[in-house]
Length: 231
Image 1: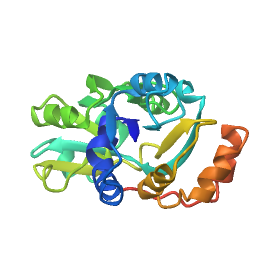
Image 2: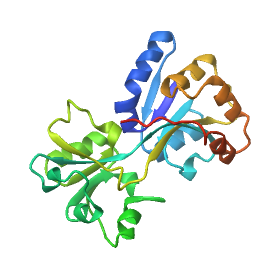
Image 3: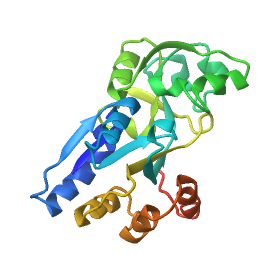
């Protein structure tokens, strides 16, 4: 079973899923590839992976059947003693006062951070962008700026030295999906993996999506499905 995904999913979401999968299928070899959107899309297009797990509606993934797995939002992180540590719901104006450290993809496409700040008549001061949540947290600890990361990338124990503020009042919700090439043969353990990743992705729902003509029709079919919110 070959999977390509981002650092955040590989580091913070997939470990318990893959452990459960390994317990059930000890003889299935697992290959986990980690990369950015372009790298994941390249692996998918060249038939080197079974599933891509990513976020967003990038045209890079237009050839894949994409199934919604879970939702997440951005969190704001600062070190102890930072002025924003005392503000429970920071505004865009307050964030604009400080350098920002966040994901590279946050500044591309619809609802990018640039667009969100611009809607408030503001320009963010971007100090550093990275693909890796742990890199962002490291630079926040070093005082390079205010971090904006996925809430699923916050570890209550390892990140106890950071002050975390909910950013859901400022930033849109993101949906992470699992995708595979249309027309491929999914084996039984592959259906099981998808349901371990997202319980609502039953074999029946996945098979219906496989036989659905377009991604727009798949999205409509899942419109009434309660996609869980990871906190």
